[in-house]
Length: 238
Image (cartoon, rainbow, N blue to C red; front, side):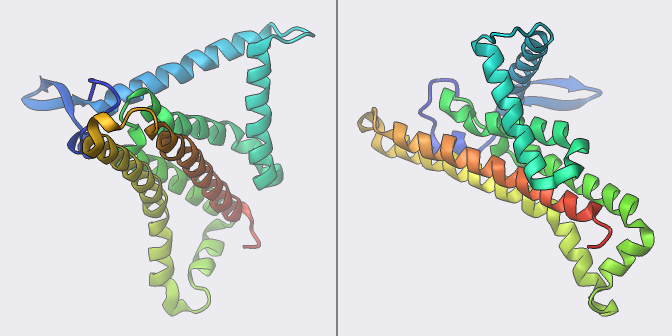
């Protein structure tokens, strides 16, 4: 895993344990996912701290970093408000955070890391968080009566089917992100593994697609679906 960007197919598919330690007789492993997550979280925290300091001491003639911060905030706010409208004020911080986290996770393969989002243990909790927010909003804005009425549409006998469709939301969200990132990781491992010394410069184009382009698309799709589901849950007329 740490011998460069050319991973084996086994390394790409499997999550590797780096070291382990015992807690109350149980073995706990620190894996490549944990290391990648730590690196990405540290980058985001450092970016947030630096950005906060720059914004607090902003100048009339902004520097390059201030321009970057303002551009990122402007684009993220535009995406959230453009999708959710006035409802966005409650969720801008959350959507912006998961957007940056998922994007950095997806493109981390460009620097030789195993993308954390290629681990279902990372994408499933993201789906669960979205699922919890959706249902909290439903019960807050539609009340219990409205939720039951929605489940019983168009007929009462459809309640089990509607319940299954609700439960499927976090699974579909997490599996879509996980499967797309993992498939790209495996394909790149196959390219390097099969072509070996012939995979010199040209696979960079594939990295641009699988890591950068596809990673950005999957980030946008996850956030857009999250905003759509939450907006629908907050609308008492739905």
